[in-house]
Length: 179
Image (cartoon, rainbow, N blue to C red; front, side, top):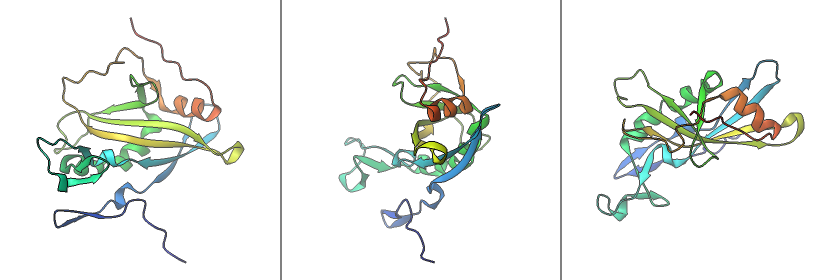
């Protein structure tokens, strides 16, 4: 049996190899009460281990992905993502101001993560009928400064399993707003 190709190819930062095997796609299930089990396929973008290129602080030789540079802090924290993502079925999330993404706020019990950790993701249905699933694409994940304010912070939260069910069924997602 042939080995499958890795989702992320290893690369070098300076002369040091950086492995990304912990960010291989993962599959898990999610179920809303009284609803069928939904399959979720999760993938991770390069934003979970890179940051935007800034010519004032970065060199052009540091570029690795579309105007992105390796970020040691995000990379370190990215090792926590598979476990965090697998626990989403019991979590609540809020909609971002972009209205196509959602964010899961978490305070991790880790000596390395002092600030709240934010996982930004998008959901979309994959496939048709009973063979369908929901793709969860983690767009970004990083520690946020406590002064960060989500422009849509007046949105109420939604249970992740309801979000998955609505996405799978093609129903619009509506968030009530706090007053």
